[in-house]
Length: 391
Ligand SMILES: Cc1ncc(COP(=O)(O)O)c(C=O)c1O
Image 1 (tube, rainbow, N blue to C red):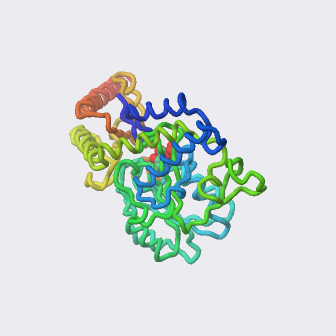
Image 2 (cartoon, rainbow, N blue to C red; image 1 turned 90 degrees about the vertical axis):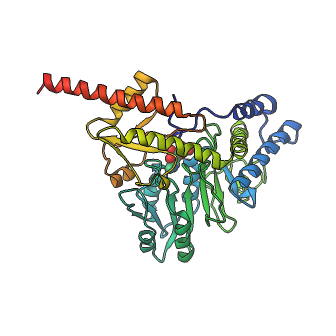
Image 3 (cartoon, rainbow, N blue to C red; image 1 turned 180 degrees about the vertical axis):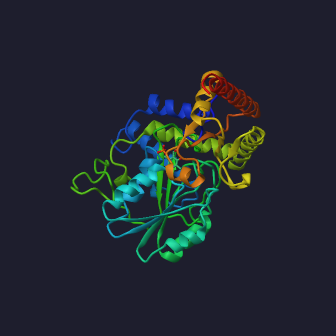
């Protein structure tokens, strides 16, 4: 049973598989790379996907969407494409390594970085971010929802800090896109990094970066764009100047199908189901002695994932036991966010994270909760026997 949708969503809606296969089998050509019929059809698929996704995030001009192969590539493009020596960035301890590692690397190139600690519940205080702003703050970069504990950050208020500071607002929507509404205008987002393969239900190898019209981005990759071929310099036109090389046509077609599926079901219905499943899991887990749920106390301040520790049980052993004995896929460890675990007090072991998706049911969560009880019991009794034999 798959309960690791925060890593990547699985299964995908049937329409996603169909769209991928159709693009591979029936179209096949490279978009923007020829004037023949199938190449034009490929270009049409990419354009329609851009338009559909733009509508989903209330983006007025779909050409401001750059397709990437995951959220990491989108974050790297946003950071390397904007920040230069002498710029200052404010970020938080709740970030994924896909944001932190490029920032550490950029520090080596003279970019100043302030990492603001979140509270022990994983939520960042807006005043703490405001206090970290300096005259040279070029960007405030935060993940909307923590992939470790599901804490939802106050992005509307943070965007106001950005506006006052004259800084750009970069939001990592890896755990929020496809889960809760995101409107780039309402949230005053200048740069939005989105994976296509998680909440948007698209295939792996998909993602995107939205760049607001007033933001000037420098391409970080040079190569063929299918346009302006005599220019020796990379064109700065959006989006092709930033999408050098052959696009992931089948992936993009699948990502559009994922978004269409969400539009059909309704984001609110998807969110409600996920909250119900997470609440059900939380209730069951809270009944187990030694279990501690990470993140904000109120479940309405959390989304997408539920993370927990067990006082006397190694979570890695628990996850392995759930896999071996019950074929349940959940993730234990640091989830690529070591500073978040330091903030939450769960270093070095990390936590066990469960993240149901649209295709999970209440029966799945009941099975999971029951399995957790049995695995903890087994691990505790093995430990008890071991301690008796080796006091
Ligand atoms: C908060 C956050 N940011 C970034 C990423 C990286 O996403 P991708 O695997 O699409 O590069 C993840 C993936 O787990 C994530 O949870």
